[in-house]
Length: 110
Length: 261
Image 1 (cartoon, rainbow over the protein chains, first blue to last red):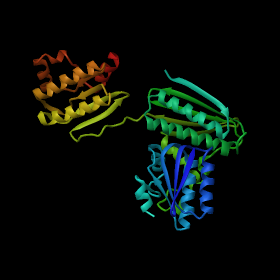
Image 2 (cartoon, rainbow over the protein chains, first blue to last red):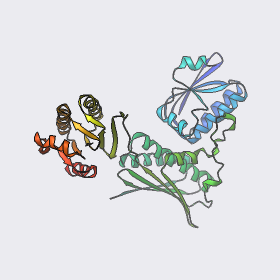
Image 3 (cartoon, each protein chain N blue to C red):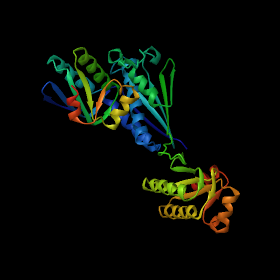
Image 4 (tube, helix red, strand yellow):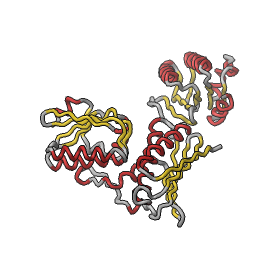
């Protein structure tokens, strides 16, 4: 798993690629925690190059969403890959996360 | 004949990708589509994670053994661990799907995903070992169906096309489109079921002859079934009953295709 973080004014864009599984999910959790410490609560997670995700990855996304929401922010998902969307759908999370198909819309949503 | 595969590795998180690959290869060998392959990988991933977390209470607890029995369209995965703790999925906080983010407890999401992706989930415990059996079937995919033409995959790689109504120029035009779409998707083995066809025009015959030619060229097979006596006589008069494989039932038509392969 690789994560690139870009800061756009008060929104942070995380571009994740590779596999989010039990081995890499804790690293993603750490990245989310660091963003919390920096008081960055408006996050866009771009997931078009995520090849694989399991429940460990979903858990980190849900935890980040809960944290950000309590601080008045949000976690929005941008261009999920087919597998990411499938897993979100199987878990009933497509109604919890706002999913965007293009970056400009996702940024403008905040 | 079912094929058996087996993989035995120590229960470490960094070994899970090897189990996931094993599941993916088995699923592909069973003829599953990409999504079904992914669902097998996901279920095995979640099941192995649960074994490490719960049965062995952490890494270094012991081995995980997976046996997979593969038949065309079916995978049966059996996961065996020797953990002292019996993993009882009902004891895990059930995953509560909610419309509200704050209320989501993602704890039991792994078990939820296993149940969502597999057709059957069974646990068996003895004093020696815990056994989890997961069964996944290949589900026939259905092409976008025209209201007047039903399309379904009735056997792996064998499709059934069922036009409903009079095979006049209107319905024949739709049938042409469907057949072209199937051909471009490399679907070359199919049965055309005439049970709901009340009439066939010369244009309908022409479409069938073209379909016969293109499937033949692609080494595929086309069979017709359930023709009414009226439709059958149209074929007989034109001598086309000698050209097409014509069966009295869908099942026999499939047999024709399978035998010819």
